[in-house]
Length: 105
Image (tube, rainbow, N blue to C red; front, side, top):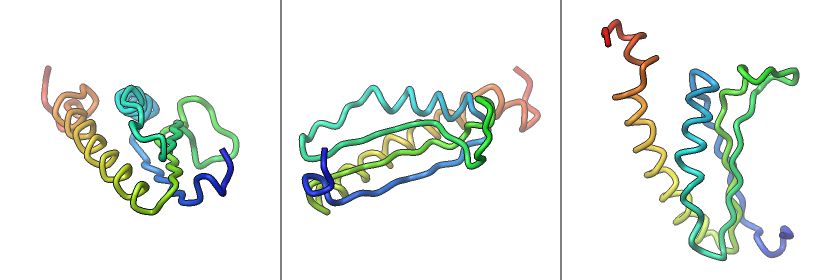
């Protein structure tokens, strides 16, 4: 994949509270492959710190590459919708969120 084939790029870095939540979001979203051959997506969980332990990796980083700006926009819109669903489920059902709000299980 060269930059001339996929010249339009966008990287989205989403910090989440914990590595577990970032990894869960990654696993939930990565199962849906990009349907268009004109779009490529790479996802990883990373950290903003140069010396990082696995637990410090709590940033979901997604890089999109596309052949046209329209294909990039369509792909990112779909990603944001999926991400909204995943984050909504985490907010409603995740045990750490419930504990932080003082709700007993």
